[in-house]
Amino acid sequence: MNDFDKLRAMQYFNSGNYEKAREIMDKKIKDIYILHVDNNIAFYKHSRKCPAYGYAPQEKFIDFVKSIRETYPDYRLRCIRNVGIENWLRAKINQPIIRNKQNER
Image (cartoon, rainbow, N blue to C red; front, side, top):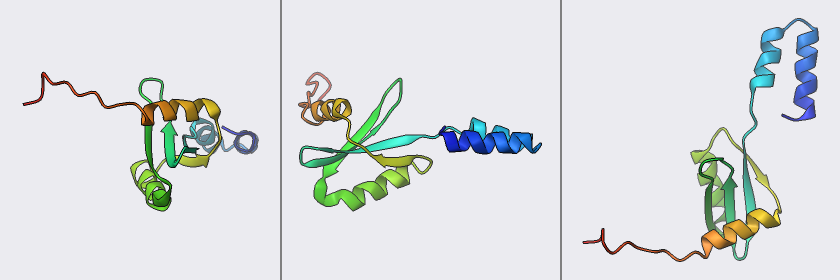
């Protein structure tokens, strides 16, 4: 929650509209980060258990963003530059696919 939302919630609380104040205070802002990684556009959604990520070529940027908005309509998209997340995504993107031959038929 940003400072603006806190101020709005305080104003509602001071005016006696406790339900609206609680609604604002309970609202969690969920972000999906859009990053530029090598020649790809990638997204990263933080989660404690299993972070979600995906990537596409730069030429497919508009379709990529549309698909993220359809999949996660309650999330806010933010374009950022974060070296730590970029390195994590770069490792995931360049990770070789290992197939389990035992389960293949």
